[in-house]
Image (cartoon, rainbow, N blue to C red; front, side):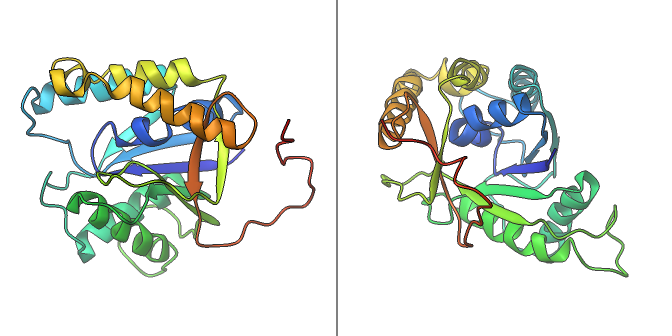
Length: 229
């Protein structure tokens, strides 16, 4: 079993970018924590109480725990305080694996979030600090795609999510203030499904989610590589 921390700038980013993989990891027995950097508000149809209830509903659908670091939405900046908050979450959860948004993005909160978490990975191993939890250096750092750019992913690997797509769909739609009430956002499920089908086609599976890593993956066996039909 691995302990996994999935960081998102706002509640719903993790579900949008890798909700199917989160559900799959839980099914496989891993301990997954969603870490929200901000509360995601204000938004046109939301408020802090509503967004918190939606985030809790999404977490229930995915069967995960989540926490919030309390950084200000729309004003996330790379700072020592932010790094230490993120490192504290990593240490408290004792995360072996960390996920964060892909580092190229039009949204400043997304860019800042990933830079913060990258540095927090280093900070989490420090001794003689006031950070909570025991020192740990996560073995793996992976990036998921949830960008505000018209960006075509060029992933390092993809994960088959055909068995968990419906839970991803439900988790995204739990955010009614973001994807049900705003008419212009109602097409998000169709877009996510189309993307999942396309990425799945690249590995011979019905659906998949893409990921990127800066570090090489080591395989002890070829058994886990998907066999393309």
